[in-house]
Amino acid sequence: MDEKTLFEGNPVMFGNNPVLFIICLGLILAYGAGLVILLIWYLKTKATKLTITNQRVILRKGLLSKKTSEVNINDIRKIGTEQRFLQRIFGVGKMTISTAGTGGVEISVSGFKKPDELKSLIRQNV
Image (cartoon, rainbow, N blue to C red; front, side, top):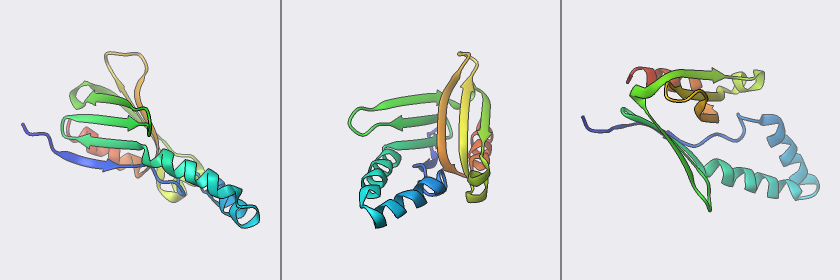
């Protein structure tokens, strides 16, 4: 079976932490310091990439140094989602993926849109 990409994306900034985003905008207007915080935050979000294929879930993190976590779809035993109040309002949340081979979480990502839909996408391919 050929591997097909079902989802590929980066976390969102505003929806994941709207209060911090607004504070940074205020700091930009007042002192300009918020621009540095937003730039670092932006680079961190662009350096995090989640890819879901019909065979694997891959999380890549890092700008200068890289870390990759990869889980075969067939090995997934548990997928958890979590949304704080403001995250629910903005439609983003956290997703964790565990396998039978380990006792802990293999992949943990936060700030992605519609985590329940990502969970369903993975479950459809198990």
